[in-house]
Length: 76
Image (cartoon, rainbow, N blue to C red; front, side, top):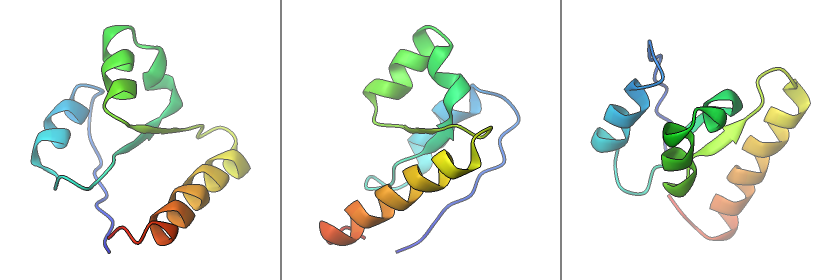
């Protein structure tokens, strides 16, 4: 298992990153991107996991749940 950390400069960089990451990776994005109209819908439909960066505990819970799901389903 591995984690890819990308420090992108704009919201549109996410689209390019989705093309180059391996198939079984799921990007995690800030929750604000979900409300950007067409981009938000596209991210949601592609399975992006949204985290609320302003609520630290909620963000940790989302990431922890994702890790538990990966371990439970034996996903690399």
